[in-house]
Amino acid sequence: MNLKPWLFAALLPCSAIAAGNQGALSISSSSFTDGGVIALQQVGPDPACGAGEERTPQLSWDNLPAGTQSLALVMFDPDGGKGIGVVHWIAYNIDPAQDGLKEGAAGITGQGVTVGRNSRGTLSYRGPCPPAGDNPHHYALTLIATDLPLGTLPEGLDRNGLLELLQGHALGAQSLVGRYGH
Image (cartoon, rainbow, N blue to C red; front, side, top):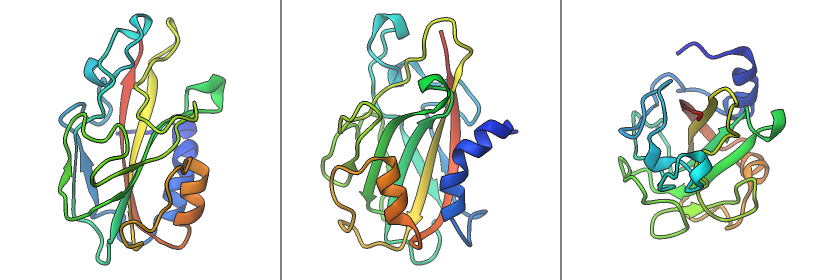
């Protein structure tokens, strides 16, 4: 997928902390393809957004870097918030022995995942819901492999807090970008 320069800049904090084996790591989803439209099941429940189910997307990963002890996910909309971006989902302390997450399985903290604060400050997944009439927004879902043991990262982190604690601990990252608009 050919990323626009502004999208690349929005993802830069994640890619800047990822070192080494970046090319080997892969992330995919049966909920949407890279560059494709995000399914209504993942969209926010507001009728103005399409009345989605606000379910977390299904995710699969492969080729984790050697030494991976835990995984983190960040779903960020660089088009949202009138240009400053919107965090839709933070999830971490994910066991790398899993080969993925089932659709709807990680919207709140539970067995196998700690969910951090989205831009609204809630500890939950927030489905896409761009303003009506906007161009479709881009939702970058970034998987970060870390050398931090499971349970090391505390509850309640936001994007900035997570990225700060991952400095020096990221082993690689890969992104999947979906689009949504109405």
